[in-house]
Amino acid sequence: MSQTKERLTKKELRQIWARWGFTHLSSMSYEKLQAHAWAYSYIPFAKKYYSDDPEAMRRLLVRQSMFYNTEPQTGQIINGIVASLEEEIAMGGDVPEEMPINIKATLMGPLAGIGDSIIQGIIVPILLSIGMGLASGGSVVGPLFYIVSYALIGPTISYLCFHNGYKLGINAIDVIIGENAKRITDAFNILGVMVVGGLAAGNVALTTKLEIPMGDELSSLQALFDSNFPKILPLIMVLLSWWMISKKRMSATKIIIVLTVISAVGVVLGVF
Image (cartoon, rainbow, N blue to C red):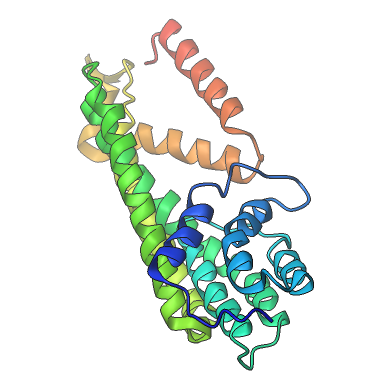
């Protein structure tokens, strides 16, 4: 083993975090997915601790090259835990080399569920709704707001997750997996559904021009909907989109085409 016995410095920890945080999707394959960037993030670690032990360096990089796929921002918790374990291994601690592999395989699934619920289910829809509102009049502020805000929020979540994972070490497992993980995921899923429902009601615009007989006169069907079932038509379109995604397994492109056709036909027939 190398004679280097010093702990990882704050600069070296930031280097591991940044290498994974900003390259996790830059080099992917069907065989390994995000593993290439993970191994890349541990090259400075390997040079620090195993510069005079090529075999130990090889084993380290092989461990970090296993198949890996999770939500990148919250998934930094796993990177922090693994960095803590690898540091103990390099320092001669009583940690088997198989443990980082097991940690990655065990936690990448639960973290993907939690992370997707937070990032894709809450943060991204909220930022997009604000950006679309700002851009509704043709202003460039809308897309700039989304780009800048996500560019700040994403790395911040990633950084905090990595360092908290490093500090907690293997003790973080008790928080992430098991019943705790299920409760956290369920809570964020429910919150995400509420957020998407509110955004759909506020941003999906669909009204009908149809009129129905009310005694001797014709009355607007939309007025009837507004008084008894407000936002019923946007809700129907959202449910239709959900059905096409979840039941028919249609891609987003196909769903957009279907909705465009429905809207075009409805306008031509005078329905919308």
